[in-house]
Each structure stands twice: as structure tokens, then as C-alpha cells.
Image 1 (spheres, rainbow, N blue to C red):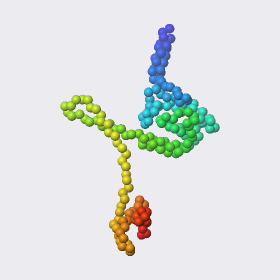
Image 2 (cartoon, rainbow, N blue to C red):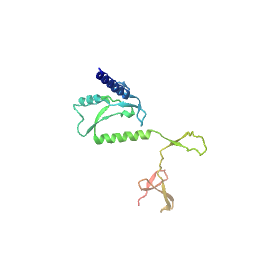
Image 3 (cartoon, rainbow, N blue to C red):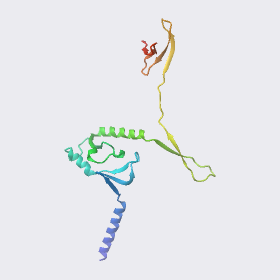
Image 4 (cartoon, one colour):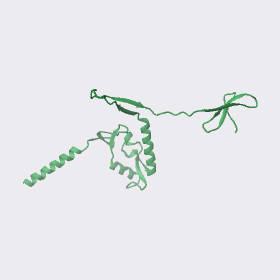
Length: 184
């Protein structure tokens, strides 16, 4: 009787531990999401990847498992709101998948604003509460400079300003307002 009691106690502790660590999820369509968890890059709800959806996708393409040299990719990334449904899956080679992922990460990085919080350190006798100061950074822009060469007189004794184009060609603006390239 004492052994049965010990076994039931151990089982109860094991079940309590298992259920306390279980994540609560919810399902929309065939995609399962985790309550309270979000992707850090986009803020979208975190998706639980379904091995059964992946198997169904591969079977629909005639495969039992992922072919060698290929990976299953989500057409619309899960982190950007894509579903874990087989209709949102495709087979890509490993290199294609790496390039696509890099391109998607670059796009996410460009669309996210860069919010950096700077904390001003308090003076020696100031109050201990410090409020963060939000600094908004933007991507610097670059303009190509236009170089002008000194003017010269040609045989008709008119003065022209010679410009150098982005590819190194030299030109001037004629009386009609069009570019006329100079032969070297």
C-alpha cells in the first residue's frame, strides 16, 4: 500500500511538472501559434512548426522525406505572418533558400525603424530615476558629385563648360539644352 502511494505521488509530481512547462497554444486554420510569444524582428505571433503539415506537403510532391540538397521553405515567412499550411510551402535548393532568407532579412531590417534608447546617466546627487531619451536614426543618403572642368575656347571662340559624367565621359550642354559628348 505504501509503494502504491509513493508511485502515485511521483506520478502526480511528474504530471504537475509536465503541465506547468507546457506552452499554451491556439490554432488559426492549420497554423498553431504560441500565446504571448512573438518574433523579435517583426512582432508577429510565434508559430509552432507542424511536422505533419511538412509531411503532407512532401507527400503531395511525391516525396517521403526532404530530397537531398533541398529544404522546405515557407513562401511567406512565418516571422512575417505566413502560415504553416502546406499551401505556403515550397522546395528550394539549399543555396536558393539561403539567398531568399538573406533577402527577406534585409527587407525586414530596412522596413523596421531603428529605435535606439539612450539613457542619460544621473549626476552624483540627482534622483535615482532616469528616463530614457528616444533617438531616431535614419539611413544616410549619398549624392554623386558633379565635377566641372575649366572652360575652354574652341575654334568658334565660344565658351563651354565641360562636365564629367558618372562613367567618366565628358560633355557640354549645347544651345538646345541637350548633352553633347566631347571626343578625347
